[in-house]
Length: 477
Image (cartoon, rainbow, N blue to C red):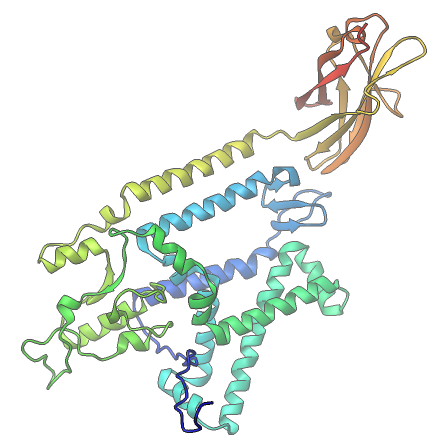
């Protein structure tokens, strides 16, 4: 039994230290503002864009119509059996990530990741309400009083409204946005819609307001995966320690002899949303957002030293600069065998999807022979095969289709429940029709075990015509 005076073992868990990034100005900060505004605008506005598809289709430009298992993207309509288009887009997204990561590191994380975008937005609100870094630190350490309660209430309310708008915008992608908005306000929307908004509101509020960098470090797998796509020519943010060291303070407005350019002002640390010190080298937590570059360049301008003490560079640049040589051109880093291969693969998949999109038919048909029984013999000796036909009309208007087989096949087509060989398929719907093929007694198809046959489907009044190959089972003698 241990003595009561025994020293407690050290804890393996360190409590999170809140990060309060300082505001910074510069080209990378401006780039992040521009991309944030663009992406948030696309996300919130897209469900409200109208697109006239005619009387029988929804007028929403981008719509995931789960009820009818269709996806609308402006003039493009994707049906369930065309999921390969979605798979192709996912492959392109993956190759795009590989391409950008191999060229410029974690630019996705720093500029376009939803976690980064909404965290930036939440920090902007926090800064408007509570002030910049020092004011927010003081408020954090301050005891709960009227000022702290008021500011936290205003901030959390703004965060909640943003989070709720985020969850609300997401559900608008799955049904007609104006109709759903009215139903949500009047309490007539389905429980699934309210539950989805609630979950997305809670996660956005928690992730963007409180978890922030912890999502990037602990929850997201991408920081660990992206290392496999980087090499010595990948551009990433680094500190030029051969120029900045040894660090020292600025004395009487001048840097002392033998001292590096870094004056240890901590500006790069204070603006970092991940709370790291880039001068310690490459770190898993770095999202390469470039804010430390803006902060350091601002300091270098003030003390009259060259810019880019912190900047985008590759390992090969470090080797060259340490020797006093000029760095390799940015374009040579970007266009190299690996990135060219990713670009070719990405472009190849894209071209393939476009070609498949324009070559697809407006008619889709599936013919399934009835297997039980494979054939029946009618009273006059005719051999009959039955087929279940699914005819899909992917156009915005009703269409009449004729079903036939080649005249020289020795077979006659017949539609169950209909006197002719024509059927009407409503716009954007699928029709199931039983079709019979009859072979007269003694004919070649009737006496052979299996006969290959081609069934044709033609839209009246147009040139749309497709076929489906199947087999006719005869009574071999």
